[in-house]
Image (cartoon, rainbow, N blue to C red):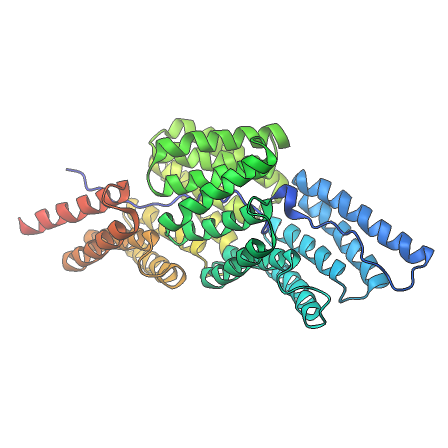
Length: 447
């Protein structure tokens, strides 16, 4: 019997593809608070700032993030010249700028401006010009949480998301879309950390609120559908995930056109699902279309481009085309390390997949340190009981098996099996694969 090696990882890109809130609710309107002594010049400056933000919002919805950034920067300069650098309207515009930086994968810059926005709001709380439980404060906390999540700091993100949700629930009606967004984002973090049971009711509640409040074809509904589908895919319930992904794609194409970055996210995730079901010929054109859209709209160094390159590499590996897969994976790894840093979970995914490619071409010696590094990153970022840790343990075991280190391989398979069972349940395909690997090695070792 052929040994089932596993576990390569495709990336399921989140429906909240940029920033903390979704497209329609992402930009806080710069309405302009009262100015102590207004002049025609100051009123004109504030009005111009409002027009710049409105124009930036149009570009943002069109996926033209780079073009929107200078408009918001100009709006901030105008607001600061009239209102001062610590005004709450400036904090709103800083949040807008943060969302655009995130859309471009510029997480360090996004963190800087979001922390400045939070500092302005916290000072306003001290001066009693802003309530500690104001929705604007929750928005900023949610925004900052999203940045930490993108950078792999899940513990910090979790704390901020929980704080944001608490404020929203205290101040908004139960079916407000702000609460739905906070629920959706916290659920996505739970999914990334492997806490699927905790994520499911949050996703469902968010989707219900969006559909009830905004209608069934709203972009926020598409994002929630995408994320709920990602959860089902993570749990191995592919038949449940498929119609959710397809509906999300239809909503996005209907609202945004065929070449928007969010359409690329849906194409990428739908392709990954088909790939998981062994439908490689169906997945390939979807991946290729997603990559073309992302490179055109986001630039070649964006993290989402790396995700599609990684997934396309994995598909070519499954088709046996290692010569095509290797440079795609190396390109993805280079982008992720440059943008996200060397210890991000996405870097671990790329290291894992590159190692498996080396193993498949007979170079297990080169694969070993890559798998070891991927495992170390995942254990640090995700905790020792995460499903991705089980995947790394399984793959590291397979390399030791190739190298004849059977006792070490058995130990790693055993640990992988326990972690995967606890994280995924006994019927998940990955659990079955790891169990099969362990049983076959034990059987061979006893012969």
